[in-house]
Length: 245
Image (cartoon, rainbow, N blue to C red; front, side, top):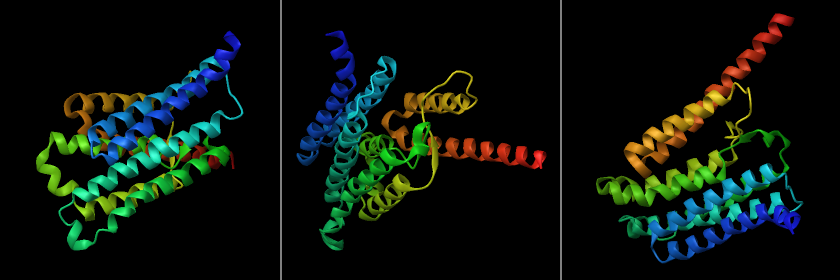
């Protein structure tokens, strides 16, 4: 009995991730974007703990990786697209520019699927990410309804079809970019842990003061620290090669 629980627990947590994403989509299309965003955050928690459980229990099933990606397509691909779609509909320019531009929101779902398919077959992504992880992208988009609610003065900038379209293009590009980004897997005596601790420190401070409005800044810091980390690592490797030549 214990072995069966140990074997299936990570996949069960993944299924809760998928369930949360489905519930969030329902609320998004009901225009309850705050609840939809909470559902996405809950899915992100489940997404973290399914991998954590698999590592702790050393329970890696044949379907686990594929199931995780399928769940992520819904929770961090389609759900963020649904949230963005509803934000497009709130834009005052919707009638002037054209009602069909809002469908560009679903490019996030498409590029998230491409990102996850690439992740499943890319052997380089065992300890790092190549391209922005879909949960990070989803959390950033899910923070927008909270930012609008906390800072109504920003509505004129966020609920703008040009701003939202630019966001879709940039985030879609980051999802599939050949950009190495650090993972949050801490390892003993790993010098890269410094960057992970810095990220967590900055994130904690920003979220403490700005709450959900801090999420875009945290994602920017995450990308910046990753670039610095890999630039320094590449310089060290290049320097070592030159010394040995």
